[in-house]
Structure formats: C-alpha cells, structure tokens
Length: 255
Length: 261
Ligand SMILES: Nc1ncnc2c1ncn2[C@@H]1O[C@H](COP(=O)(O)OP(=O)(O)OP(=O)(O)O)[C@@H](O)[C@H]1O
Ligand SMILES: [Mg+2]
Image (cartoon, rainbow over all chains, first blue to last red; front, side, top):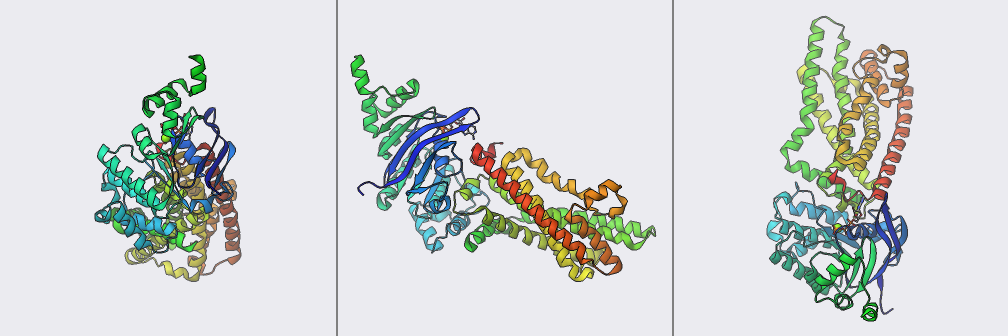
C-alpha cells in the first residue's frame, strides 16, 4: 500500500436543529500528513473535529479511522488519537504533574513517570511540574495541553487552533515543537488555524470549508494558484467572500 | 479497567489533598446540621418528651449519607464540566461505566469519612451511639448509598444536559425525597396517600428500620429486602436516564459547549 489512509470521511453531515454545521463532507487523510481544516468562523471546522472524535454523533455519513468504523470501535480508536484545543483545559486546581499523571494512567501508559518526564523536557515544562495549573500563563497552558495530548504517543493528533491567543514568539515556538514532533514521530495532524502564514508553514494539504461544505482541497500552493491570489491569505478572503473557489479553467474561459 | 478507575479516583483525591476548603466543604454542613439537631433533641428531652426524640439525631446522620452520596456522584462530573476538563475525559479511552464506578468510589470514601466524624461527634456531644444499631448498619448504609447513586445518576444526567441551568435541581432534588422518606418522623404521621408514596422510596425503609432497631432492638430483614429490590429498579432507571441524556448531549454537540450554559 503506497498511501495508507488513516482517516476516511464519507458523506458526513451534521445538523443542529435547523442549522447545518457540516454538509455532505468527504475527504481522506494520509498517514504522516499535516492536514489543515480552513474556513471562516462558523464554517464547521470544530464540528468536524468533534465528529471525528465521536464527541458528537453525525446526522449522516461515516467516519473510518485506521480503517475502523468510529461508531463501533470508538474506544479502540481513542487509544491511538488525542486532541489539544483552546476550549479544553486540564483541571486548574491540580498541579501540572498531577494532571499529567492522571491522564498518563487513564491512557494506560506503561511507564508513566518516564513518559511524563520525557514530554515535560520536550515542551519545556519541567520547571513547572509542581505549579498549580491555574497559575500558568496561556502559553504555558498551551504547552501543557500539548503535553497531555502526546502522552499516549498518538498516531493522529487533532489540534483545534493550537496557537490562538499566543503571542507571535510563543506561537512560533509551539509551531517548532509541533513540526519537530511531526517529523521525528511521523504523527498525522489535523490542524485548524486562522493564521494563513502558519497554515502555509505547517500543512501539507488543506480543506477549505464554507458554511459546512467543502469548497476547495489541495496543497496551500495549489489553492493559492487556483484562487489566482497572491497569498493563501488572499485566497482565503476570496473563498470566504464567494463561498466557493472559481476553478482556474472556469476563470480562464470567462476571461 | 482497574487502572483507569484508579486514575479517575486519583484525580479527585489530588483535589482534596491540596484544598483545605474542599475538605472543609465535606464536613462543614453535616457537622452544622448535627449540632442543630443535636441541641433540638437535647431541648426536647429536657421538656420531658419521650426518649424517642433521639431518633432525630440518627435520622439526621442517615439522611446526610443519602444526600452526600447523591451529591458526590453529581458534583464530580459537574466539576469536570465547570473546569472544561470534560472533553479530555470523554476523548480518553474510558467507558461511562468506569467513570461512574470511579465517582461512586469517591462518593463512598467521602460518605464514610463524614459518617465517622458525625458518629464520633454524636457520641461525644449527645451520647448517641450509632454503633448501637449493630449489624443493621450495614444494610442501612448500603441501601442509602445505592439510592443516593440512583438519584445521583438522574441529577448528573441533568447537569450534563443542562449545565449551570440545572444547578438548582442538583441541590434541590434530594429535598423532594426528604419529606416522603420519613426521616425525622414515622411514616404513620403522613396522610394515607402520602404513605403510599413514602413506601416507594427505599430510604423510607431505612429510617423506619432505624427507629425499630433503636426501640425494639430487632430488624425486619424482609422489609429491607424490598428496599434492596427497589434500589435495583431505581439504579436501572437512573442509569437509563443518564445514558439517554448523554445520547442527547452527543446529538446536540454540547460536550464542547457545556460550560457556556
Ligand atoms: N452544539 C451546537 N448547537 C448548535 N449549533 C452549533 C453547535 N455547534 C456548532 N454549531 C453551529 O454550527 C456552525 C459551525 O460551527 P463550528 O464551531 O464548527 O465552526 P468553526 O469553523 O469551528 O468556527 P470558528 O472558526 O469560529 O471556530 C456554526 O454556525 C455554529 O453556530
Ligand atoms: Mg472552531
């Protein structure tokens, strides 16, 4: 098998009452790929991630992770994936080390202490081990959340706006760490961000969503060319405004 | 499975190990209640009322057990919602059953701790000896804990589904049960139709049983068997309700948004 698909999404639809958050979405993600989910606010990125983690049940469609059906093999899949996001946090009244210890055990890590120490070193958290989580800065909390998300050596890591609310320097450091982890461990990453520079730096392939629908898919460079934009940021603006991507062919014809 | 349950219990023990106020929280209300009821009992005794008034203290201690058991299970999940940790727990490979078992263990530990403190205080201050009930304590204790869990699963379901909006219900629902459980008075003082309601609560059998044991020194096991059977039904009902609420929450995509409500 040349390409191993770790995630296969087919016909995925999610309606909340009369709001359609995700509509008829199909895409696949390769092992080791950094896959970006892009789109304006409310496009359905977070909902898609929630669906892929089984936190929300789909209205229609199927999700397969590692070739397993998510509905039926949820726990087996959860052992092998993890999530870091701005809207989740670890209990603020436990120390950094206590929080990591609880989750290391929850994931059944064989040598929890060694694993925690290794990751704290990697994420520059060692000196904060005995600090109460609630007293950390947002950059430190982001690193702690990443640390928790790496405890089970996930094969797929979901990152919902991992650098939101970080200052540029800290954001750059988090990106460095993520890239390093991705390269040394070959983790597949599903990534959302509103920072297009970051997306260009991080993502091998992106999927553009607008109002829950897929409007474009490809490498950041391809998308930029197809949108005839000067940058991915401009492409984003074009797609967000029109709600679709005029194909190059289509555009040349009109020309 | 054991390891994951241990991890979840550990999470709560860490919380209590650090926080003096949290530990204070566990004991404050029960001890205050005991003091009030203890002095009321003292006063009533001095007014030369029959010695049966000592049942008030027993009733208070046992009621607290039921209440703590319900609260423990509900609060530990609500806590995860409030600190936004709920998603971390729900994307870990842990089952709902494991979460529930861990919560119940934390609940038992807390209830036992409170029970011991109240027992010692009641003996020291009012010469009320909980241990005078002997082995009957075991079924009493279990029935109240189990009924507390059943009610707790119901209120946890509400907390999960309605977030902060359900807070009043979490605290309030046990007090819907109290008047019908004959905590401080015998069932026979209730109007006829309420007596029927009372006997639908497993807790009623415990409070009635406690008075019989203290008065006559014997215990009707058959009646306790009824309470245990009922508990089984309530537990199934509570678990089903919780499962239904969880299903709705997944459908409505609320797990990531719970803390907003
Ligand atoms: N639980 C929910 N109940 C009702 N509507 C929801 C729910 N979750 C999301 N939505 C709606 O679905 C749409 C997609 O939301 P989602 O959070 O997935 O967007 P997003 O792409 O992550 O946006 P952002 O960039 O702002 O994070 C929005 O219109 C949102 O209001
Ligand atoms: Mg989002």
